[in-house]
Length: 482
Image (cartoon, rainbow, N blue to C red; front, top):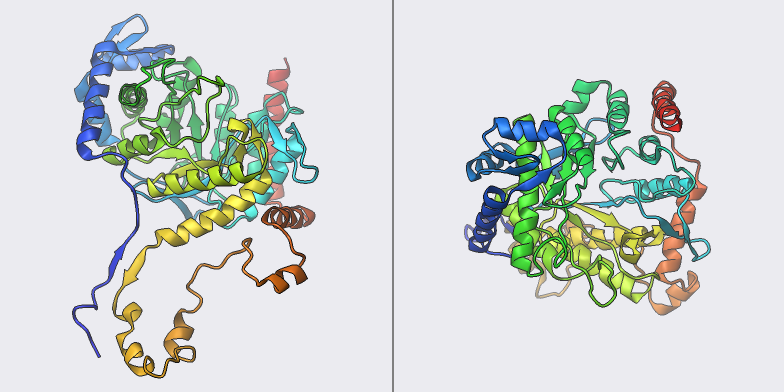
């Protein structure tokens, strides 16, 4: 029986808006005034020359950017960025409110899952971390996770070798100085089969972190212009600190942060129209004035800042799955869950730092595995409710309701596997749980890590490509050793 009133496919994905369009417009207008009246300081002459040629007012390294140039850049920047896996298949779509999740980079310490000890990160921890992240079905992209204490030279280039060798997932990478940036791009080109192939199907995105929204350092600007020229995607995030490098009030801090991002966007579009850029837009950081520590997880500005990215219809870079805790305790799980939930509901596109602890100074593979389960739950939630003829099942209700037996219905068999199924969460009764070992979630996460790392490592790259990558690294190591 056809039911015209119910046969429409009604579906909505839940989301949360931190700001109205009118509020976004006010922050945008304030940012335009900051750029045109106050300006920003640039420490890379080619960027200054480019802006001067475009009609900006320049006094030494202070550049004031007119509003019309910002509006032009917002029109020319792509609203979506697509990243590919190693086989050339689309893997990540950055834009709208599509959320993708990944690890972070550069933790100085690791919470060792074998000993529960906080210790300095080693190069082997990067290998282990990438293998674990690659095995997690809901970790969509990878970052290097740790800054190894036993690889002081060219660590970023060596990290890229590990990521290329042990995972096929898209990569978000960092370079600590300008040196190594071109070499990493060369490594990506070798793996992709050439520069044009990498440009057409980018497998990685560079995370650039300038000094601040008002002071853009040479290395950051040089990276920006280099990537924009090659039409390779990058994240540009100039930080501002509330009460430090910008006003302590959220509105003023957001306007300053947003102005810094828009300055980077203008430069990128002047280098090459349509250069793919992801921003954090209006996300200032806060300082806990009692401890003088920057809290990594707070309920304040991140939701608001993401809304500016959606207002501009630009890809949004943000955080989730991390904690300020020093132990993998209740605080760690609470903060990881809430930060992932907030980032997802606010429509972050590239949600990174899964597994971070201690305000970004320590990483935990256990937390990565636990967050993978949390992310799977969130992805199931974000599917939303689908209402149509099939899901309302009025004919099935008519046939089975009065005898109270839907278990044997074909409709039940057709849909029974659609519900979310956990991989880590325990749903047994008490006797079954005890019979299987009576383990905690943390113990099950540790067992999963040990299972992954005990298997023979999967090498991704063909031997000849591995050799070419290693030759690039050896050249970098030799140059930096001089």
